[in-house]
Length: 57
Image (tube, rainbow, N blue to C red):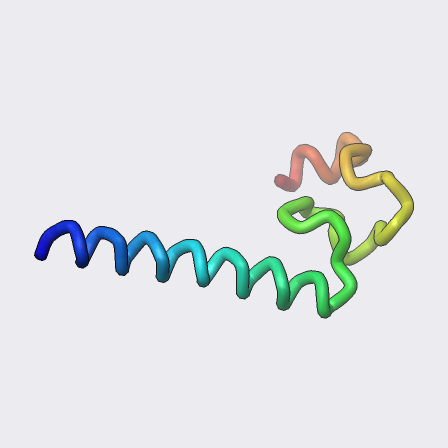
């Protein structure tokens, strides 16, 4: 029974992650998880934050 619960929890977590990625892609965010994801679609600038942005976190 414990194995069934563990598998169910893992499937829910994986399903949630897939749903999150799907929703973010539908919004047009190309760099999911990047703090600049909404501001730099397809520009390749997601890793290039200014010093001020790095300090603000």
